[in-house]
Length: 505
Image (tube, rainbow, N blue to C red):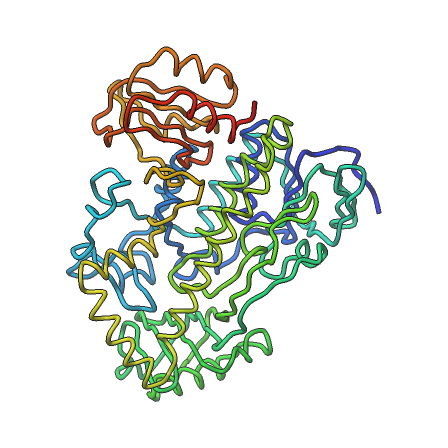
């Protein structure tokens, strides 16, 4: 096996969106990065609409905006004409999302109940996975990230303060290894990290086909005595067959099999005349017992898997990357405060567990049983109330995300609002360089002097704002999370302690 003589700061296993976004974060901070990807060709019809369509949560949209990536992805965003989106978008009322197929609508959501956010509509965006990856790989390569395809990680050894990685018949060395290599992560398994959770109740199907006899097949999502089907004419199908997940990856997906499952679940005599594309999935929900093993870390599906219900998986993984990137970069630079890298697991593991439970709760509503149908009816009533719609929007959109940073201020631990300064600059645009940020509405010379202790790590924004939300000053981590905030004359000692906690001495 040939060996590379280059020592990379970080080697990332997996060139999906999570691995690519993490590579961009590390490269932005000046780290050398190698991304190893098993697949030689990144293209796949499953990454295109309708099956490759991904709804981006509020934290994801904000993160992409902070790094100047949002406009490029928004240019590829789905419209109501995109195949597979019509059922959800072309309606008299504007849907905000769904919970187990039960839609909640914008006209019921009370955003005034979120005082930690600026008033106004909440952004939403849906884009193809292929387009997201294209934007991210372009940024990664522009910033010096090396992406090697056809070289999946086969194993690794931790030795002498580094990790030697075997991939594609070669050996590579990095100071750190991050497994972003999916649900069947080789990195996680080689690290011996347990993957704990619940086994599947159903096999899910995503199908594009030519159909005949569809007169009795109703468009939209339907729960039956045998499972669930979602039909978008003329031939896009999603189905859930409560077989305990036994068919998933157990046999080829044939036209005859898809037809048999569709007939049984829908109770119709519809015929599948031609099968264009079909894939299966399950509601298996597992999470890594630890996100770190020495110099090896996990992110994305390597750290947690669940059903795709509600479209949480990509957002959860990108949140991992945003949280981990700056912390790992600081560790590599050697200017990290004690325990900073450990805070990655402390903050992200509970978020993952919460999303897994959200997925499990949706499965409970989908089961083909009288009790689930009764529960579904109650949730439908609740979701039409302002309280219900607002709650589900918080969960599905990610608006309720808050890390426990040990501070009482309601903004600390949350995403910083996109404060608009009087000179036209916005908070998100001030974070393009990947540094932290102190926004000062008091124009205090002493606060400016304090940030000069960390000139390479904390930027400074000063002036008034269109809506200051009652704030006098706010300190933001590089991932956009508020680390400290003050509604009165800033306590410089408290600010200094917060800055030292997150940015070192």
